[in-house]
Amino acid sequence: MTFRKIRNAFIAGFCGTLVHSLLILVHSRSGPLPGFQPNEDMQRGLSWLVGAEVHTGVVRLLSFVNGAIVWGFVFGQTYRFLPGNSPWLKGVYFGVCAWLVMGFLFFPLVDRGVFAAKLGLGIAPAMLMLGALLAYSVTMSLVHGFFDRVSADP
Image 1 (cartoon, rainbow, N blue to C red):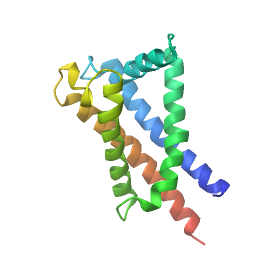
Image 2: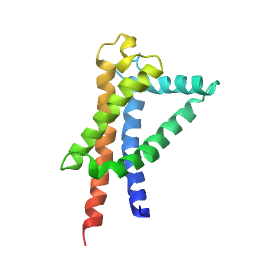
Image 3: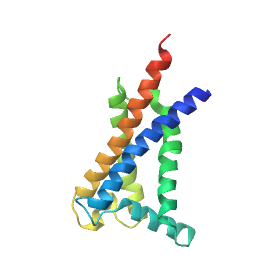
Image 4: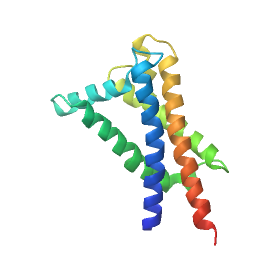
């Protein structure tokens, strides 16, 4: 693993996280589903985990670090193994996998049920998260693919 690969994975993860964060921020301020607030769910889950109230800023910072560093690194390591011949398809595949993990693990852990079904909002929360995660993963994949092309050129 070279510094260049780590740097590229971080930049790609940062770009994807920036897009995802902006979408979630817009949703939290004026979204069509005011009863569905993933950042508040994360804050509640972290507060339960540590046994104390966690500030909103800490949640946003952790979310950004998780998306830019942790998942950016995981994505960088798995990029060449992801199905698809283009960054677009690789990003869609990664996003759908992340969506499944969120739907089957995260939301039940914060007592929202599978794909946030306990909110009583139908399929809308699941579709909103799918869109946000696809925006994240496709952006990350396009940036990563760009760096792959640039570094492959002589």
